[in-house]
Image (cartoon, rainbow, N blue to C red; front, side, top):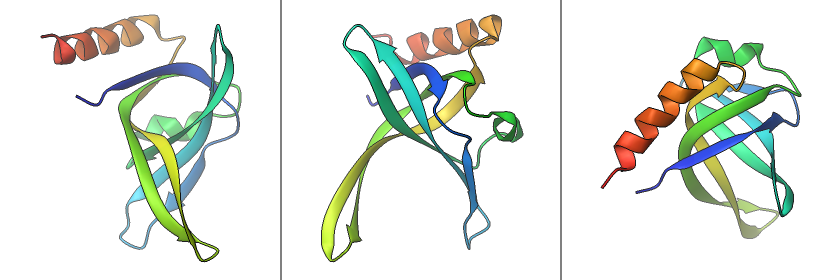
Length: 111
């Protein structure tokens, strides 16, 4: 099962892209801290909920999604990028919503 749960702050304002198909993609870097230091995690959300467009740099969020590695050609070479594809994203200050979201994740991965 591929489940990722992250809590961190947006390192920059989300970048909103509209694809030729009409789908919307929101990309951002999430700054996550741990005892080992700080890591920037790229997050992509396809067809995000409308509230994500109100997020800005410095907003603390909780992301539930899946890890994905994409391969693409750049400068004549194949390169890759590991990112989290967000399924649900909520502001960390919404404690009740975060608790429900984490309960849902735990129920989904329970053996």
